[in-house]
Image 1 (cartoon, one colour):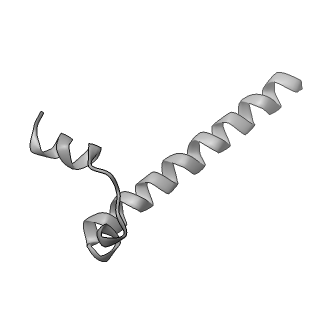
Image 2 (cartoon, helix red, strand yellow; image 1 turned 90 degrees about the horizontal axis):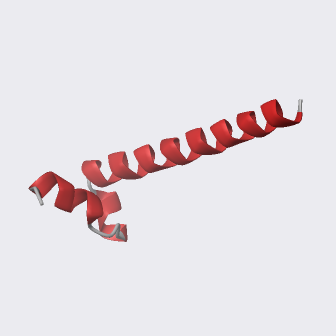
Length: 49
């Protein structure tokens, strides 16, 4: 596994939040989570309409 892949699978800790990289990772995680919820809600609306 490459170094960048190891970074991705490493568990997220509170200490990571103190680094710019850690903040960016958490922000991306929240954006992906919200996007998937929005997509799911949209699909449900399409299905019931």
